[in-house]
Length: 109
Image (cartoon, rainbow, N blue to C red; front, side):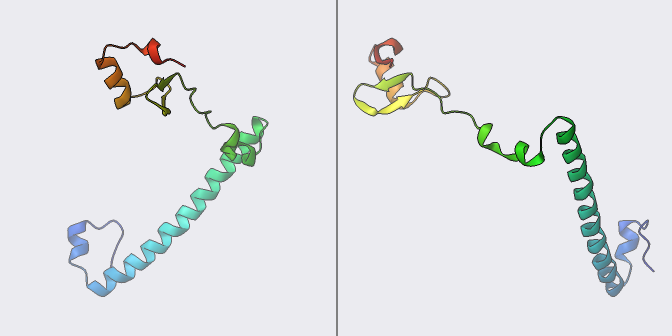
């Protein structure tokens, strides 16, 4: 008979049929527990949102929270389609122009 408090070594000595039955029961128990905890978390989040004056749908609607695109600060004078907002890594065209002795102000928008 399999007991949930058995060590892995003891479980390995159990008959395969019993282990498979235990695994099936365990998988079902895990799924039931997941559903239960998911409901509990959902209820807590809904209550917290409500206490703050929001609905859960309102908070989950990310359209209003999305960041606006960065404003273009620099444009490649050799290719107007290439731009850079001054954030993150410098594009290769910026590095090339700087290597030619130009400054960022030379191609600022």
